[in-house]
Image 1 (cartoon, rainbow, N blue to C red):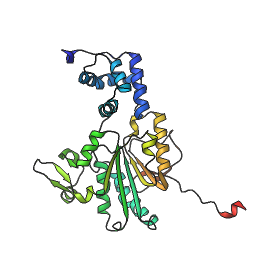
Image 2 (cartoon, rainbow, N blue to C red):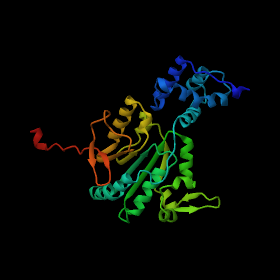
Image 3 (tube, one colour):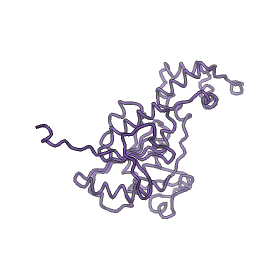
Image 4 (cartoon, one colour):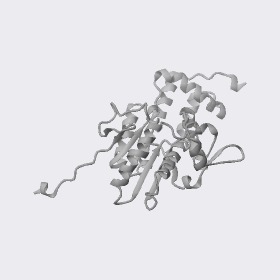
Length: 292
């Protein structure tokens, strides 16, 4: 049977695939990851009834349905495990320290823009929206934008639908569950409309300069447990992009296992009461007298 055959991944084709994937989305597989790439992509060869990884490489490069396959490819290569209220100390810093500060500094324009980059199935941006709702009524006359983006169309479909299994609520308190979710007839939890209406979703490759050019003037960027998939070069490109898209004084929140060491020194590392976060410095305005 076709499904029972082992399809070898030659070293030269591995390097072609590895470099192509890296150029497309920043995910990098070193030489020791050849078996991982082989194992995760074998199912795609079987799906297309291809006889070799070289044929699959040509499909990714030249086939008329290559964009559709690239979406599936990324889905196979990444782990989309997430849940509501993940990494609570950072969320506590966001809700009790960062939000009050921004409420004061942005009071003049009453606009708050938050980007959840690599949002997977939507738990993170919905969590952000819930925490905003929990912060009081101060923002009611503000323009609020919470954007969730991911390169994977499949997970975005789940995010837009807003229905989650019980496993997504391992860190959700019973009070929050009752207040912001509706239990359906299947035993799943549907996000409340008042949360859903605060969040929009977009398919976006963080290494695509054209797509990311549409995003600007963000006050907070969450990018947690995403750049761990990137090599050093791709990490620097993404972090530089975040820097450009944040307003002065804006915040960058990474996952607890991630840091900007050896990536960027453009941000200030701030030690808050609940967590450490990165902040874009406020550039000093040049006084007119300096031009005299």
